[in-house]
Amino acid sequence: MEACPNDALKLVDTKEIGQEKVKKIVRDSFPGVAF
Image (cartoon, rainbow, N blue to C red; front, side, top):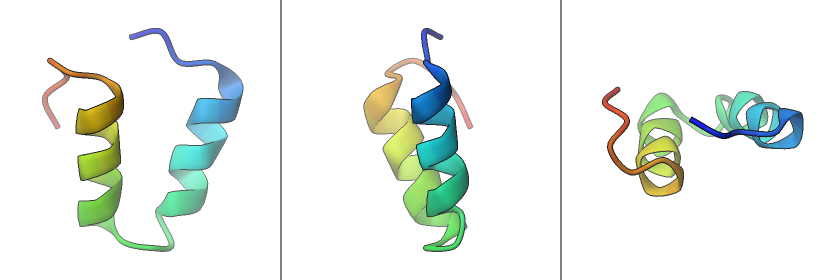
């Protein structure tokens, strides 16, 4: 999983939007990563 710190921060910020959206974003950003 090649995520730069900015991507990680973005995911942390999105947590406020909702867990499901975060999971979707992660799946879209990192195909093959199971959450």
